Length: 255
Image (tube, rainbow, N blue to C red; front, side, top):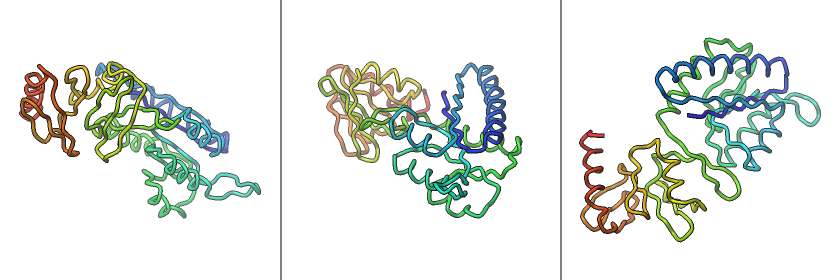
């Protein structure tokens, strides 16, 4: 698992201190996962302004999983204002699903955090035990929910593997059908998409043209798999037997 952590603060001393705490946590977390033979890679990026962070995300160069942001950042006049909150709103408008944590010396704007689905406030000076407890909680949830990054309209979008209903080969492209009804067209091979989805055992190949999420199958017979989004997948010759075994293994707990 790779976790992209963005740290945004205009005060260099606070930026350095918070990064040191995050780096220490990342090292401990990585060691713990190494002992369990799982991958855990933390990549921490520093941003001294909200504009720098927003620009990287807007241009599709960066898609953080966690954002730690000072809620009070200098405005155009040099006075401090809650521009971190505005930056968070812009991140959400760009489709970012990053978990947001505001760093602040005041609880004044706590209610506003609900508007941008912030995970929590951390009061400065940041205490290591509170930061680490928060990270444990956020990353435990992150590990349960597996994601891949897909390029959508010249930017990257974080997609939960559990939200993929199925993927269908369409010429040189692959069309990914999502649980919310949207479709994502990718200029990738089916083999590459299957490799990207390999961490989710419930996404299985069916013939050369489909990857199907077992959880999204409503019913199955020798000819058709009916998905919970209303779509029908006409199974290729020889595809039913293996899919049937995988389907029953999944629902009978034999994975």
